[in-house]
Length: 142
Image (tube, rainbow, N blue to C red; front, top):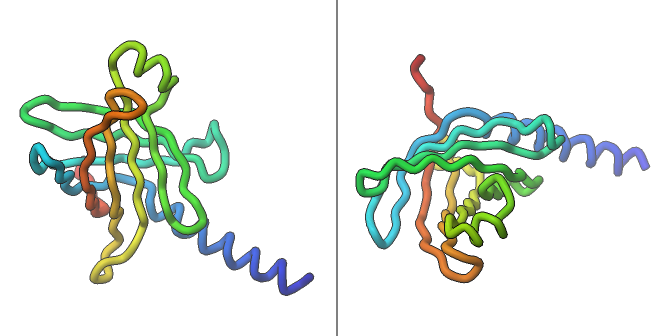
């Protein structure tokens, strides 16, 4: 029993450390069939939802059109992160607005923390545009 508790404690400590590392601002590029865009993502804990939940704001400038997306999601113990538009997705699709989903793996490349992932902009629940994201932790200047 002590061994099980020790292992759970170590896993929890590692997860908490990784989770706190993702909070903050991330900047990188989104590459899609239609171009290469600068992409920013600000991630914070979602204390209202509870442990492991995240809230985020993504922004990119696609062909001169700035898009800002409010997201919510989860970070899992395997250091994968899943984010989706806030709100009721059925309503968004019915109104013709669509929604976005982002999936990342938190990893190190050359000693630097990186969010490596994918983005999908759904028109409805079947059709979507997709892009590749690689984001690095940013030190925002006030």
